[in-house]
Image (cartoon, rainbow, N blue to C red; front, side, top):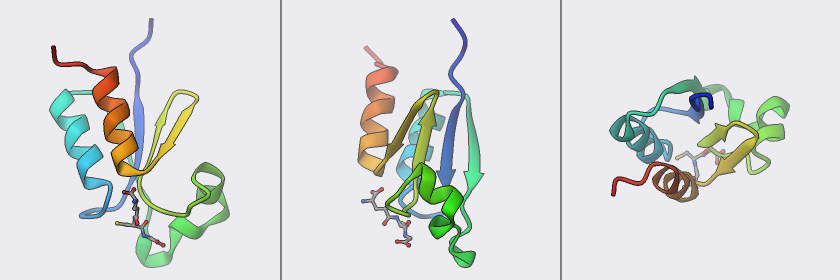
Length: 83
Ligand SMILES: N[C@@H](CCC(=O)N[C@@H](CS)C(=O)NCC(=O)O)C(=O)O
């Protein structure tokens, strides 16, 4: 079984902050992909295909794509139980 490499689409000091901290706390391998809000990249057709809400963050976990920071945090906690 391979190791999950999460992809977190983020922008600094935004709603992606909690999922980012959680990924660090869990020690999960992850790739950070900057979505540049200054140039409205969250509204680009490429990003909208991933997350039709046009909001940051988005987490990609294999075939699973999750929007909403709370949903991402719940998914990470469910996938990495501490007890
Ligand atoms: N409830 C959403 C809020 C996401 C959200 O509003 N993200 C902001 C950044 S903090 C955003 O992408 N704003 C850009 C926009 O709305 O165009 C979550 O927690 O993920």
